[in-house]
Structure formats: C-alpha cells, structure tokens
Length: 229
Ligand SMILES: *Cc1c(COP(=O)(O)O)cnc(C)c1O
Image 1 (cartoon, rainbow, N blue to C red):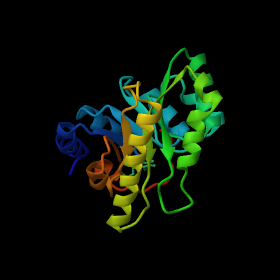
Image 2 (image 1 turned 90 degrees about the horizontal axis):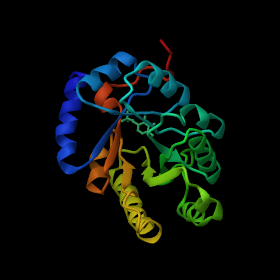
Image 3 (image 1 turned 30 degrees about the vertical axis):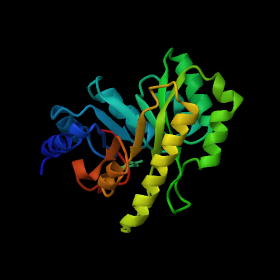
Image 4 (image 1 turned 120 degrees about the horizontal axis):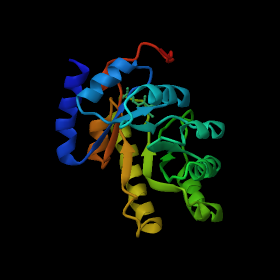
C-alpha cells in the first residue's frame, strides 16, 4: 500500500465519524510527508522539536504542525512561532513558558494537557490530581496566550485489549468531568487525542475524536533518529 492510498482510506474511515487524523511523521523524510500532503493530509505530528522545526522550514506552509512528544521548557521558543497544537503539556512550568513565548509571537497557542493513563512509569503526563491542581492554580488563570483545547493520553503498550479499553474509557470519563467542571462555557475545549496505530480503533470506540497514526500511514520506522537532509 502506498502512503497516498493509506491516507485516503483512513480519511474515508475517519472523516464521516468526525475523527481528526494526525499523521505522525517522525523519522520520515520530506518526500513521504509530501506524498501524504498531496493526498490531502494537512495535520502532521512530530515528537522532537528540532525535527519539527527543520521540516516546518522545508515543507508547505499550510501544514498544521502538532507536537506530540515531551516538550522541554528551553525548546518552546523554537516552535512558538508556528506550532498549531501541542499535545504533550505536562506541567504548569512548561505551560507558563508556552504562554510567554506565545505572547512574544503575538499569538494564542492551542494546547492539550497530557494525562498519564498507562500502566507503566516511563511515560510522561499528569495524573488526575495534578491536572486539577494545575487548572485551579492562580498562575493558570493569568495565562492569556494559551488555549486548552482538551486532553491527550497514551495507553499501555500491551496486546491486552481489555487494559487498553479501560484506560481509554477512564480518560474519556475524566475528559467529560473536566469539561463540565472547568470548561463549561468554552466550546473550544473539544479535543480528545487518544489512539495510535495499534489501538486507534479501540480509542475511537471509547470516544477519541483525534487519533495519531504513524506506522499505519508511513510503514514501520526503521531509524530512531531523524537526519536533516
Ligand atoms: C510515535 C507516536 C505516535 C504514532 O505511533 P504509531 O504506532 O506509529 O502510530 C503517536 N503518538 C505519539 C505520542 C507518538 O510518539
């Protein structure tokens, strides 16, 4: 299957049910991204700042770049001018820096709060209590240049579908609760980003409206680190 046909099949599956597709292009060359772009794909996700910056500079400017990997405070400035959605906000500190850099660029940056849902301690994300504490903090109320669009989560990497299903179910319940309690008047709090190649169908069943797919579109990743061309 070609990248272009993968995109069109996925779009035929996802568009009618209102699920947005983010094509995760990490480690993939520009020509692969362009093939997806020619097939109509506009949302692309990367997990590293330097790689996203290099690709942003070389590729068409109507691509919407999503950052899905862990973001260090000192790197926010590189992506602040152009990033379309940051999925991986996991602290008040990084959110404060995003707000500061967004102000410098005279824009509002859309963000998702990453929730820790997996049964592993290696993954990033806020737990429920930390996320609520962040939303209740005085500092958070002051941020004028960020907009929280919703939540993101990564399920445990397991073959056990029951575990994955429970984790996504729990995140959807948490999303609904947070929306009612903290964002009732904000219609823009509307994104639940969950599901990757191996588990996106389960994620959609459980209420995801944004999925992040890499290998399903581009094939297996053979290299771990991107080389600028
Ligand atoms: C790499 C990555 C994906 C896509 O993974 P695939 O299994 O290739 O679909 C999705 N989300 C995040 C956060 C990633 O780092």
